Image (cartoon, rainbow, N blue to C red; front, side, top):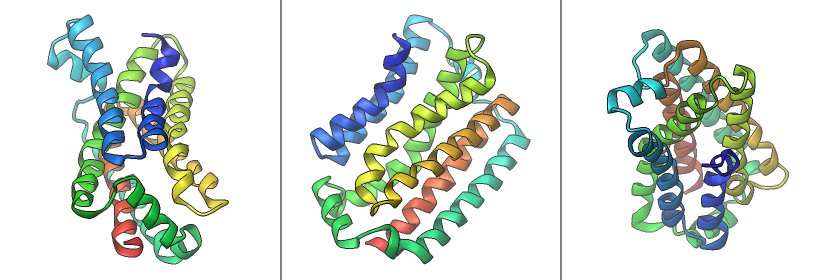
Amino acid sequence: MNLVLLFLGPTLMIFLGLQVMSSVPLTFLLFYGWLFAVPAVEWFVIRRKTRKETFRQMGLVFNRKNVYHGVATGLLFFLTILLAGYFFHSFLFDRDDLQALLADWQFSGDLVIWLILVLLVINPFLEEIYWRGYFFKKLEGKRSVRAMILLTSLFYSLYHFLSIIPLFSWPYNIMMVVPVFIAGMIWGYMRYKSSSLVGSIVSHILADAGIMAVYILFLR
């Protein structure tokens, strides 16, 4: 598949789900369907790799030091997000506008707990597998390590514009993409140094948990 399409595919799915159809559940279906289907089809159907070989190539192998780094960076992200939410949520968000937007996106009612579970359980795994697993292997030997980390972090950050800009108050909505990019760079570096994706997944889970904690504690 064309490399440009692979880079832009997740952003297109977010655009269709949120901006065109205004539905978080549908966005999740399109977005996570892409993140799962593209690597699965290429590795299992086209290349006919075994599950064990695919997991190894993607970096789904245990590395104790990598996991420690994942826990440490994840806890740092969690605490930073939580403290920022506690002290600055009144500046970062317009609560009434946010609630109205989330209702329009169908992120409300009985669905909320399931959507939060998706963000905490499915999101970190599929995003890391796609960007720091699948793409790292696809670019290996074709780009330098710095270029791989930069490119994957850049396109990982791109679709966050579509979800972050409407959620935050101006001008903080533009600035909030910077931490996303930095996190992507850190997770990419962790993946490269250890050849393992597990620590990045653990760190990503804790970062997403911080975001959900801010929502539950200060914005509902």
